[in-house]
Amino acid sequence: MLTFECPYCGVQADETELSPGGEAHLTRHGPESSDEAFEGYLFLRENPRGVHFERWRHSFGCGKWFLAARCTMTLEVFGTYAAQTTEPPQDILDKITGRRPGWRRLG
Amino acid sequence: MSEVTIRKQAPRGMITLRGDLSVPALGAACAEVNGCDLPARGQAAHAGEAATLWMSSDELLLLLPQADVPDALTRIGAALAGSHHLAVDVSDARTLFSIEGAGLRDVLGKLTPADVSAAAWPPGALRRTRLAQVAAAIWLRTETEAQLICFRSVTDYVEALLHTAAKAGQVGFHRPLR
Image 1 (cartoon, rainbow over the protein chains, first blue to last red):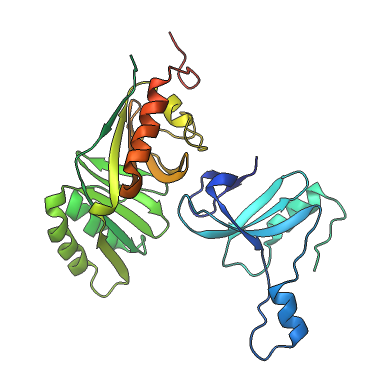
Image 2 (image 1 turned 60 degrees about the horizontal axis):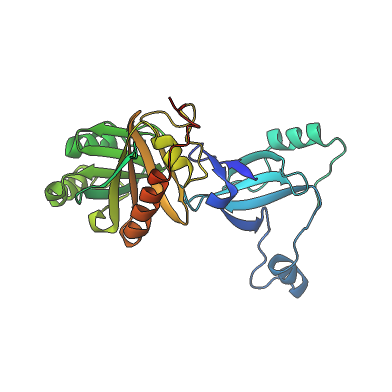
C-alpha cells in the first residue's frame, strides 16, 4: 500500500484517498514552440523502474495538489513537497542518493 | 446490542470560509460568529453546538445554529471587507452525524483507510477522508463521541454504512473487549 504525507494537512493519506496526476516537473511548451517540443510536453513521459517524481492530489482530503518522490518498484516514499516547486528540493534528492547510491535523475 | 450509537443530527448551519487563515481579522470574525477559537492545522474547535473545523490550509467550516447563518455571513463580510475571502452558506449541502460509544474507533476503522488509533487521531483532531466510496470529515469531540460530515446527496448511503459497521459485532482492535 502506498501512503503519502500530505504536505498541506500533515496527515498520512492512503493511495485511495488521493488522485494520481502523472509525472511532475514537466516544462510546458505552448504556442510557438517546435512540434517536437510540444509533442514531448504533451505525450512523452518517463516510465522508470525506480525513483519517480509524481503529482498527486489529496482529493478525499484538503483537495490540494502536491508532489512526491517515490520508488515505482518498492513503493518506498522519499518525501512529499509543495506543488509550487519547479525542481525537487535538495533534502529529498539527498535522501534518494542516500537510499540509492549512484542514482541519477532521468530527463 | 450494539455499543455504538449512530444518530443523524438535525440540520445545522454551516458556513464555508476560505481565505488566508493567518489574517488576524479572520480568526476574530470566526470567534465572534460562533464563539470558537481558530483551530490549528488538522484540528476542530468546539463550543457547545458550534464548531470551527480546519478543512484545508485556506478553508474553514463554521458550524452554528441554522437561524444564525444570514447574520453571521453579514458580520464576516463586514469584518473581512477589503481582505480576499469567500464566505458561503453551505448548510443544505452537508449532513451531520454523531457516533457515540466506546467502540467508535473500531466502527470507523471498518470504513476508512485513515489511521483512527488514539495516537493518530486524538480528541479534537479532524480527519477528512474516504468512508467506503464517499468523502467525509470525522472528528472526535471526546473519546466516546465522534462527529461526521458528509455531502447531503450521500446521506442515506453513509447512514446505512455506519449502521452496518456498528451492528456487525465488536472488533476490539482499538479498544480491548472485556
